Image (cartoon, helix red, strand yellow):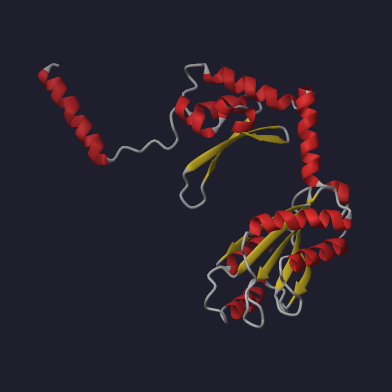
Length: 272
């Protein structure tokens, strides 16, 4: 089982994400919540969290993902989600949370949206919440006899290292990117993206949600995607950005353009 947790300040965005139609969500379990519509749920969460002015991030948002080997039923998912919340310090008597199953991906997973502020005004600690979530996931794997995801990942990596032919796409992508970068016409991200697309390879540049600044790159062929650094260190975003026209190069301002025009005009006038 893979567990991930985030904390936040606004319930509205989290609830809307978890219950958006394209995720085909199902509310499997509710604790301390009576509404089932987005607006009503948010209102209940906010009403309770507003009783404690000392907490800036009352939102607790966890996701629990299960490999196909586990064959998790809805009933088992609810049981595991409640066990996870218990380990995190929440209680059915004092805390609000929802367990929402998403059906938009092949892997079985659910989201838990909880209120860190309890009915008695106390708060659930977020001390080392990310590492604690990983630990709880391991403990639950043992308690419920679930597949050990980290061990499975290590075994897959070892198998690929012993038999590289198991990842032919990765090697093919590496060779094609390497070859294309040697061609003079491939001097920008757009040029590289276009050439790769013609060969059935998709390149995506990742950007920060708030700033829009690019920070990473990935390559996809078929159903498998790889980070640039997984293909090779020289194909990580920073390395590529230094080889071809950088994406984050500053755009010349009108003042700079006018200055450049004046300089060029002066050079022509003087016959330099």
